[in-house]
Length: 365
Image 1 (tube, rainbow, N blue to C red):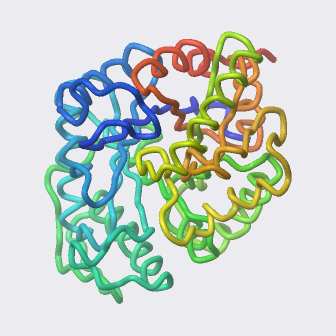
Image 2 (cartoon, rainbow, N blue to C red):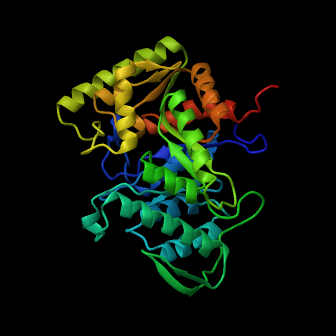
């Protein structure tokens, strides 16, 4: 169970793409501009979101730069900034992130990404999975040391620094020793990495039994490592919320039909599948064999017609339906939620006002 003293974290998603149409979003005016992304961030502040995950990928705007710009134009918004070992060096990143964290008053969150993303385009030659995850462990370990220690000397297989001290330091206080390090991945190598070094293991929208199994396994794995704090858990999922259950399912089925049609037509904005699926993506695809609807309202059909990543499975229903589903994940130990639906701007307010706001309230004893 997520600690009773810890308030759950609720984040939205900002696609961070130059071209409009991401996951079928029909908004086009201003897409890809700073003003448009700032507008989404300000809407998050107004509608009960702590911040937002910023979409990342080679060929998209640089995530750290966008995160810095959004932090400068907001007051409480926390950017969850995705970074890739191989694109950043840990010392350079630790210094940049600590600077932004100090300037923003402690609002930086970090998502460490190990999956491949056209690495040859930015000169990364370490592409086999064991090497990538071994490097990621070193990246997180060294980044944390640079944030919390002075005169750091580190000799790893992938990174080395000598007598390194960064300034300024990230904001620390209370239960926050440094910016939170989120991490995702479902392979054995990814889970070992999370158990050793991550602050939060992110899951995609699996059924309750799958999440429970993975949490139990990760709890066992983390006992093998000298951790300062227990590993926490998060859920990244699409939520289709409407006034009534019937309306939500009608709209969800219409979205799937449009996704299928666009996928057949080769529309890359809607079809989110890319190459050979990673272990976590394959787990979601395999759910379709168990049925279109699992648990109370987990919809698996999107993955069959082109949904990928967090868009492979959706929670569908009224606000009460989706809140009840999220509460069951929370009971398993999930304390961080990253939700989204399109059109992103309109759904920020709908899902924020009806779901995130209610989920922030204490559960009656």
